[in-house]
Image (cartoon, rainbow, N blue to C red):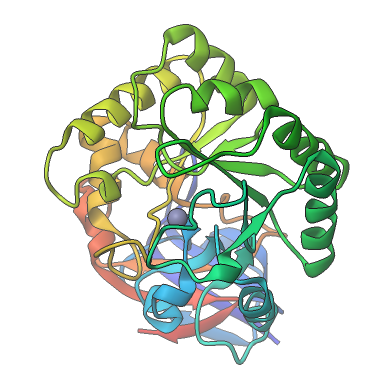
Length: 343
Ligand SMILES: [Zn+2]
């Protein structure tokens, strides 16, 4: 059963703006993306009026603190959960692969790896199972193995010296080694003086937030740019205000990008008043303060281009966000795994 979505204008990916576009889908995958005029035949034709683009991917959420159905209807077709109780989040991630699931595709890290009594032990929002305390390098490697077994898509480590003890350098190194052996990326919550340097030194792959607790040196940012990417989560530092934390984070992020670093969009959904779905303020901060072009923002917000072989996850907007980014607020329809879920 093939279905084709046609739209007057589509952004398939970098420098691929297509008029009278068609996306043919079969079994949750795209089989053709290109001009309507040269598309193959399909069993069903769906005419969409608006601007078609890939579904948005939010790389930092806590989905159990939000509403998966509202997240999907808001234009986000894939999320990565960076911290929850494994007994709850891994089954939910599994369920999200089924056609009956009402929400985005969920990938999950499970609990954060931390020191005994370390972050997020003192956080009121965090249930006990949200952290896994490490008792030495060997235990750290075992923890990674257990999480990989359960289906973790990434390993999250907490390096937050503002909120308690942190894992030792040997433990973090063991986490990175064990994760990389399983081809799993390591993402770090980095907070407190000197923690970014420790994270980069240990070879982590990703900052789960833009570092905000200190101005990082150009030297450190240039090393980081070559080895790790940053998940933005800027708006949680200010929720629409301007704060010293937001200023420091944006300054770090601008210089990280100038050094060639990759920034991906993430909101930390579940933390404070972040709305489900596309978060306009996060996108606008990347464009207006971090000075990413509108197209660079779209790249940061999506997992890849609309292309044959890729997932059939699409969003239809009322107008063109390459002209006015606020169009991202006007979600008219969402396609997940080749199924129209709204519109
Ligand atoms: Zn978070």
